[in-house]
Image 1 (cartoon, one colour):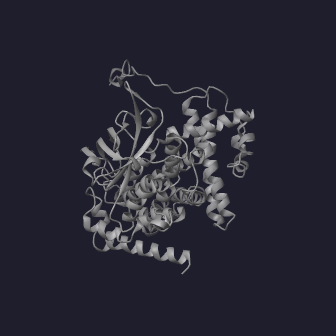
Image 2 (cartoon, one colour):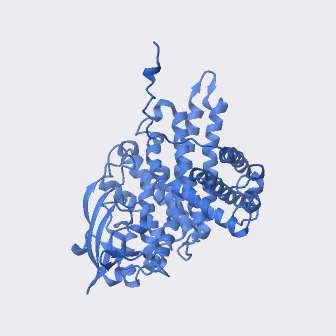
Image 3 (tube, one colour):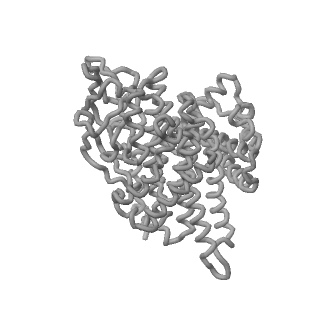
Length: 500
């Protein structure tokens, strides 16, 4: 059996497991009303060995092939976005980092246990006082006779209290209250008393009910070989891990967006209004075309990620593409859920409805692993740095020659002929980053079209992206700004101005 047929059978087995767990033995809409999943549901799902796709062949896995990892994430998110995120955490934030940077003996000890679906792992970076500002984390470690002692607090880690293993980020204690600038990662095993991480509290997260989040107290000691070994610095290792994770977001987005599109199409086809169905309304067709554009863009992202984000590659310097994929696909996920709910009417406004649930489940994707405003700002700053380096003032002149936008930029030239200028307000950097992210991801679609991806989807995508980019460019050119008025309540009580 060749590789493709073998994987097709693997995915078919996984789909059957999801159908059995979510549709035959239980109702996913009912399961989604409670926190967590019953053990018997996990047993059915994990018997299909979905995490084997992220484990190298030498440890009994399927080889950590990105295409297969994204396919598992997509298959899961079509049924349940929280389930897909659970797998995404395991794959991108534990298994791949351990496979790439872990000690050989440690990998042999830990990785095979994930194949049969008996174990789970996660990553701890975020702290109560330090979210995206990870380089100032206060969790510290010191060398001991037997290994490393690690102390601190971490929170908002997916799978809090559920994961068997953790990769914990910490900075070296230099004494006198000083911590090293660099960051190191250590694997802990909750089954070992001295490595057990205490859960101080579980949060009542708004969505993603399947996944526990909470506050963790770190006071552990791990052996020497539990420290990950970076290729250069720990900070670059962290960037490699995070950028690879961001490049797997399209996998989670793919199945979710497809589900929103399928649900919206089904509802609008079967919902009769007057003498026809909802699809006869032009505004409804436009709304569904937006979800279809999200599907097309996400397809391009998945294809590109499959090419460049394997563990054989170091992605520390690939922030431009990683940030573009993560920020844009998560915005598209939220927009798709909102549109699906809108056309579904009152029925969609229930947590037991896939669209209503999709809104609250997809919303945090725009926040975690870097809020999208921050990522769009970073995208813009990276682009502007290149403009300055090339001594180029005109945005279109730069983009039309830049490798990742040289094919897409000419299609939008009429909106890009301007000079970004200097001393740009952060709100305009966000708009500039949104433009750049769309151009980068449109080029992925163009590259996919060259391989035979259907042209009508591409053309519809290009039209919707022209609308987006024209709007963003128009915003960028507006002079003036709306300022916050902190003392707004003075002289602004409408009742004082009402004469009746």
